[in-house]
Length: 157
Image 1 (cartoon, rainbow, N blue to C red):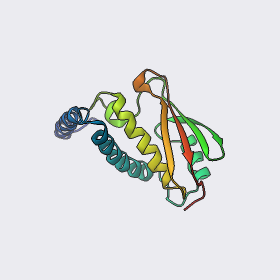
Image 2: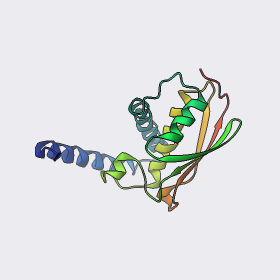
Image 3: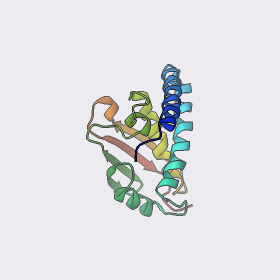
């Protein structure tokens, strides 16, 4: 079914506003940029959990299994106790909906959102703090995005 022309005009209008906002966001200093990316990631993690029906009472193993089976991209996970390596198989394409819809350009600064997003998603399902470091990124020319994760306590809250 074709998109309603009025709805398309409204969506295009909104996309231009978002694109203009990101042009400014990408000019922020390191600390301010990180704060914006953390806020965006928080909203995105909640929306993702709702979209993929991830109840907050899932344990870490259950969450990781669901992430392996479905979501915005296929993933591979290697786990040694509280340390994980998560590889999102992207074939050189960013999966951020703002990038895939061509609302904003892919910039390495956007990878901070991905780090915060993954941390916030995992923190919903464990007791202790989670640290996430992106070690490879499509934005930096890699085929996939790879994250190194450390979870202090992988028990369910």
